[in-house]
Image (tube, rainbow, N blue to C red):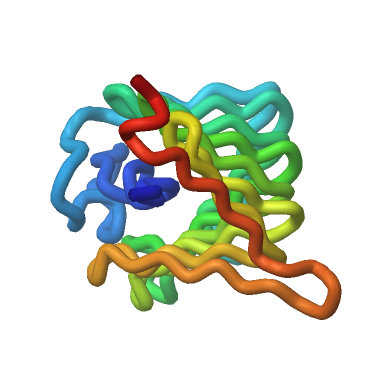
Length: 161
């Protein structure tokens, strides 16, 4: 069904300095290439921020965002969380996810899409107020709120022929 690989692919990469949290998942092993208009590294705050037309690529996975922020852990040698903001788009083959913000929490092993999130796989799609992907459990939860209910469309294989 709809599988949210999302930032887990980015998190499975190996970057300079072998940041823990960027190479601990099954799947992607190749390097991550990130381009942006600007890079800000605030070592005392343990933040690395990519600003403007951010594109992060690893093998067949591509993340697009206006801003990408890496929050390092207290020791500064591992990732606490990764936040992609503004026109977030994640693409891998026929799987696509969009939202205003996507946050990957390393310790919890979760990815949270907020701000009109939508996940598509082929012709199938799901929308909600918030979509959460539990990486280690390969489980997704779409949540609605108030009048904004979860909406899903599934096209049966027979209908696609």
